[in-house]
Image (cartoon, rainbow, N blue to C red):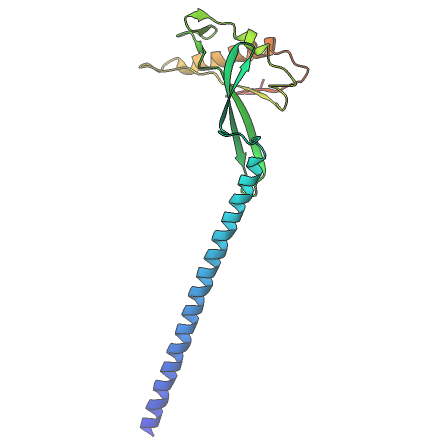
Length: 189
């Protein structure tokens, strides 16, 4: 009788071990399968985001930048898009960069130079057209910059003063029928 009971206990241990292995194996398969499903779902969402982005860039070769000309001034338009996980475009910006030609005169907040000569940035701004460069514009953002070779005191104020100069240049020279909000790095004007 003791032998029969020991045999039965060993059979029960074997069955428990077998059931435990099945449960652990099943959990492993379930976790692995859900990981694969999650991975493929993320992959599909990213494909959807990319598909939505492709429609925004007019099939360009290098979608991050394009060389443009307004009158005899060359500038580069940099495109930037922020997209939510579901593919919705949250923010889209075209940045026209003239910095290859135009620079702030050293330590000046109101003088812009092109090479060594004083430049008329207002003339460039006045050439922007509603049906071309401003066609899809919703707002204008002005960013004033300064450099800090060595001493940094006063550079933040210089950058803020340059923002005001840019806002005034854009506001007085932009010939448009549209009413744009003007933004800068510190406040809306």
